[in-house]
Length: 123
Image (cartoon, rainbow, N blue to C red; front, side):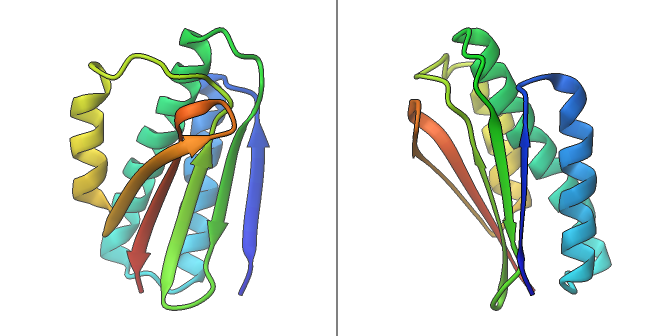
């Protein structure tokens, strides 16, 4: 299989495109139909989070979406270039994301704390 990469400006209108691409790759990778909505919702939440972080810290960089369908898992990584942003408002969205993916991990990205989110789903 392969890795699909999408770079986009941190604007809300690009989140829909990111969701569509993630679902298309997940479907092609053989993820069960019943799990595609989980991918759609989780990727939408994580990409919207990255857009908000960039907006809130006034960063004009890019949001990077990488989807890897090699191996037994589908892996989605979303990276932003924002610095540390507000955490309080993210708690509800983060609980949703953790419930949708088999694994969800936040780590530092190029802009600092919380800049990378890694989601995985078993196939």
